[in-house]
Length: 141
Image 1 (cartoon, helix red, strand yellow):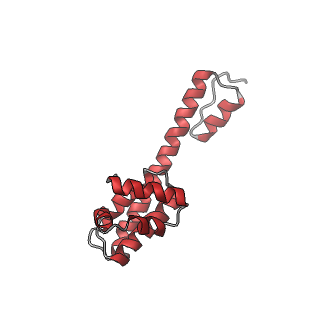
Image 2 (tube, helix red, strand yellow; image 1 turned 120 degrees about the vertical axis):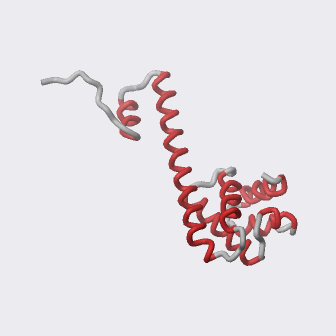
Image 3 (cartoon, helix red, strand yellow; image 1 turned 30 degrees about the vertical axis):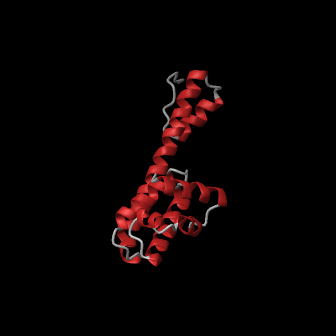
């Protein structure tokens, strides 16, 4: 018995199957959209996980008063510069540790005290990314 129905795949399997069949331009656009949606979902899950772990355990670890709000602000700052996954989680942890050690309860306090560069340096990122983060902090992003 031979079946002429198209196979049903989910996620990456569909992309692999389609790529073996040399997709048309329209199919390529669909595949690109599927890949972008998958990447966005993974990044969102990682960010949510990072915030959840920081706000659940981080409130006790980092004694600053605005722990959850600060974690959310830092997460938004870093995802705006393309950090995701373990780099995002590590950056948020480092920023919260820095703020806790310095007594800052918000990113606004970091800027008010002119400590943007010190915060960026504490993240352990490459120099170019640190410069961009400092600019974002000063611009209030």
